Image (tube, rainbow, N blue to C red; front, side, top):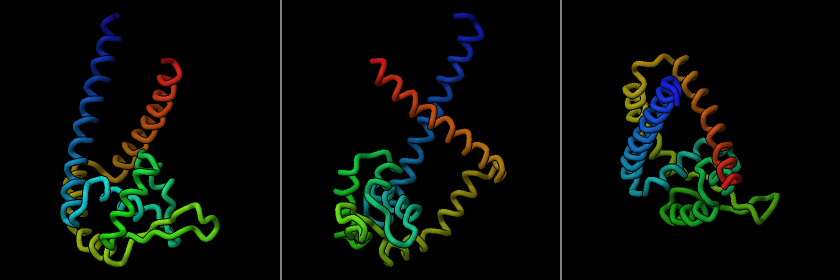
Length: 160
């Protein structure tokens, strides 16, 4: 391996470690927010996903599982627990009774609203060194990287 290729591999390795570290910190923040509601980190992520996905008629289990990169059975199990705690509603789809649609309760929207100022302040702190355009550009590049990684996973699965 020539020196340029070795340097490139070192940069990629360092990048991967930075992403792993970012992921660990995001996980820590998720657990913090979840704790404020007395739920788990993954349950918090389900609530956040529903807040993003629900356009008024609820979001199907499969859409939430796809967004969170988890099995639909995990979403079903966790959503039933969240329903018992009064955070979400589950109901069969009016078009297809096999599809369960989930939505946040008023109680959950009130909790999220009470956390909004804190979250906004934290986001301003986290992204203080970036302009809105830079955050948008970085997000686009990370989305491209995510797609490439998804394809790489498929390639590895086929090759092995």
